[in-house]
Image (cartoon, rainbow, N blue to C red; front, side):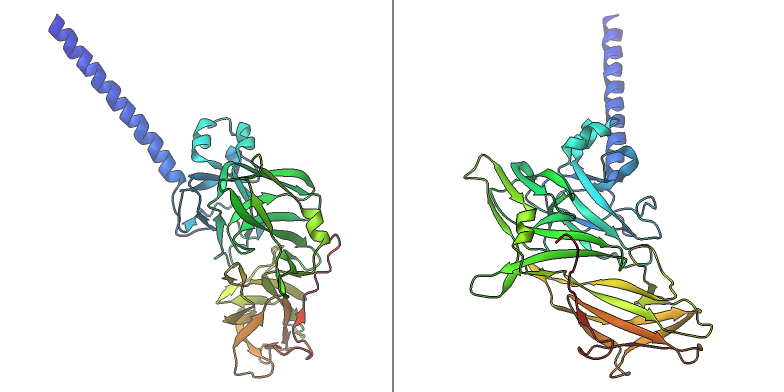
Length: 378
């Protein structure tokens, strides 16, 4: 009887072990699916932090789950979930909690709202738009040091490190008395970037303030944080910063496409690299004029002052018409400068005589004009 009992105990232990392995494999399978790097991505994230992160749209809720991104990831693609990344452009705050907290609060995620470790502003440029931008989570995100930001302004703000084009430390909503961002490093230089929905122009503007630099010239506004000499808390009031501004930059330029066609031409669309572009409000075809944002490429702690574009065209009636230089029709490659608005003028009253031209010379009719940033509330 003793031998049989020992055998039965051994069998029981074996089944328990098998069950544990099966549960572990099932849990690992769920987590590996959560952290899948999608090649056919909606947006891409570079996670420079030392945490595995789980992303949500706006609030930490099951219905808002976007996906996970592993620590120290290069470029990680999130799934094209049409709930967040549909045909039309969309913008929202994306928040992150750690994988550890995601497991801890599974089934009661609403209790994890106060466990948000990072956040950023996401702009989805529509299924037909350009979504090649890589959003970066800062390496020094998280930790015990508190950076408390007062934002009584009318603008949402991202706090970035290493320059206004650098990784995001956190998102500070407009009208919020105090938002707490958490940092690991004892010393950080933080750069505020203001976000604004310009409804009259139907675009999303990102603007970083400029201040006087030592020795002359301008530089992006910043604040230096040192937690070593404090109790681990640093503060910043964004309204004070706005009051001291001497200049603003956007890290982008804009193209205004004007439909001056006649006859039975009707609506037109703006095309980049064979893809029809969509405005921030979801418009693709239009009878009048629409504006499109062109992001500058990052350079050091800021953005490049210009960018070369090619492959621009106008589509109407299923036909494509190349955009050409108004001063040199053989030229279809254009250098555009940051913080300027360019015009593409489309004319013609039959499909046989449609022309699309861009004027690159300043002080000429339809030439580029500087952005003024004349926004109420600055």
